[in-house]
Amino acid sequence: MNDMSYVKGKPIAVLGGGAVAKAIAGDCALGGAKVRICDMPPFAEKTLRNIEKVGIKFYGDQVNLYGFEREGFAKMEKVTADVGEAIKGAGIIVVATPTFGHKPFFEKMIPHLEDGQVIHIFPDNFGSLVLRKLMREAKCDKNVIVGGWSSSTYGSRVDTYGGVISHKIRVYYRAITLRGAAMPVRDTESFLATAPYLPSMDAVTGGDGVVAGDTAIDTGLSNVNPVLHCPGAILGVSTMENFGRIFGDDKSKFSIYSHAYCNSISEVQYSFYLEECALAKALGVGIQPYKREHFFSRENVLGQEYMGFDYLIPFDQQDPIQYGTGPFTMENRYITEDIPVGCYVYSQLGKKFGVPTPVIDSMITLAQAILKRDLLKTGYSLEYLGLGDMNIDELNAWLREGKYKQGVVL
Image (cartoon, one colour):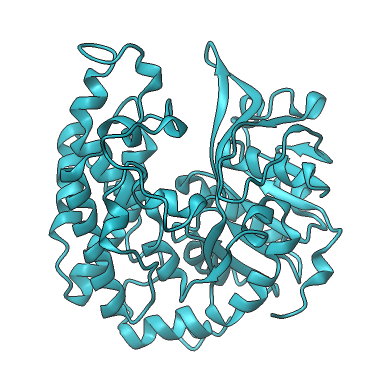
């Protein structure tokens, strides 16, 4: 891999104020890095409350195959609501926001980018495509590396009390392997080479390691959230809505993994995955490989990220790791993000390149019927990603070499 050691010792800027951002910020600080955390107004007043004073309390079981863990109060070098202030002089910039937070952060970030900075998006969710498109439109020619990961480093939740967001982050599992790629792919080797300088990746780099994704489309297709969340929440909705009513003693303990998943839902999830594989083949890109049996488990394919491919919990056994992870309503990112971003992008790619996606399309139809609104109105269109008028060759030239249609080269 390329020598990227110049980022060592430089501050790490973490953009976002939710569970993933706080977990990464806390873990990096506990791992010895100088960390700045930033959320934008008006959210920062609540999401970053007390962090400057007391730090981030990072704790939890952190289940993983190799038993790697950290715990403690993590002090931040800087807590700010100013993106430019957060990223000034940073070596690595971590973007860890819900998908619909990407564009607002990117727009604030672009004017302040500096040559040599490396941007990690957790999870990518096509964010690297959006950022490169916005940079091109803004005529930003800074020599930066942009990349993203197929998943988050953790399963994590923010502790709240009476609706008040606390500084405490509970981490219930840690990934031991993640799939990542740069946009364009020619930067992937350098991108992956910076993972050891991000202490939140220590369980990965010291575990089974990073895996080079084929392209930014690969990391989007390899994101486990749509295939896990959408069939799980939609087909398990009766279990969710009845939990704590006519069965189950405490609604706050509900989890689709622990209480909704079953053989029939796994059949749908596997069919969903096969449609993703067909898309990858048609586009000429890679995708995370799974075997059929990996889907027929209480943890489904999520468990492979932190316990390896031998980790299979039968459906007649419980899964206490996931207790309380929800969702508790259909007005949840499992639907409101994974349908208009993941499923919608897959569906559009299928229509554009002649790949049928009936299972994925059914998730969109059912989710919109349940929530009684058009979830695609603000979804990620191919035009929004900058891919709308590209053929296969043009798409791959952009993804792999940074060569855009009009002759623009990153």
